[in-house]
Image (cartoon, helix red, strand yellow):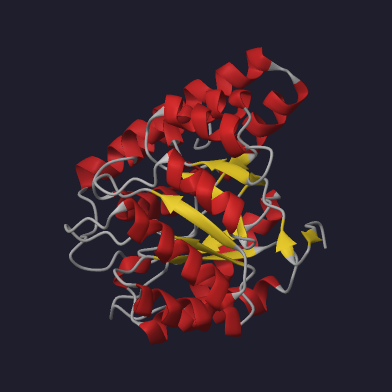
Length: 302
């Protein structure tokens, strides 16, 4: 087992793709396709997998589906890498229900967004939300800082890092590289700061992010692993070249219907990821060709 527990807390680093949740033509979760996805990512050498996140349309899963996805992933991975489960809900009560389900089937850590509906909790409310969730579930927690109108600000984060034993990381998805730099400077020596600024992984790694937990890693995990290794070894010329290839892919994939585009990108690479769930629709032929062109330009498709 390559990953390490310290005081029962998991160490997060490297390239961790958030997996799509594959749905069949009847809009049912396809367990066999998820296993195929896991096989592909592990064969490439990723450092962990995440399920039921934004890329995995976790916000659209019933509790029963969520449980099945988590259980399938944990059982099939079999301890080879950490399995992280997203929790994308709107109340502490819901988060506890989803989190307990994930814990009961052996998920290694939770990746939790702030409540995302239009109403905005206070900073004290956010602090209480994450602190209570971690302490009641007693399992590793990653703050998924993604909701545009409800940011987890640095002041709240530093309090949580100081007060909550089970807080092991933050996934910084807001596209603000200066905000990422501030977080790394303030708490990067205490928790794992993982970048999800998909088009800026190169500067994220240079700044000290311990890895990436991002949708671009789902589409081109091979390139992301090469980028991570180049930066780690100080080969910045090659790293910049890979960054530019990643940028080409992300400009085609990173749109409002991103989960649907990710599934098409994977299909173009020969990896079946199923259909998106309504209200997301399959992408048009025009968009599919744009993605195909980007993958070719990036050198991952002939």
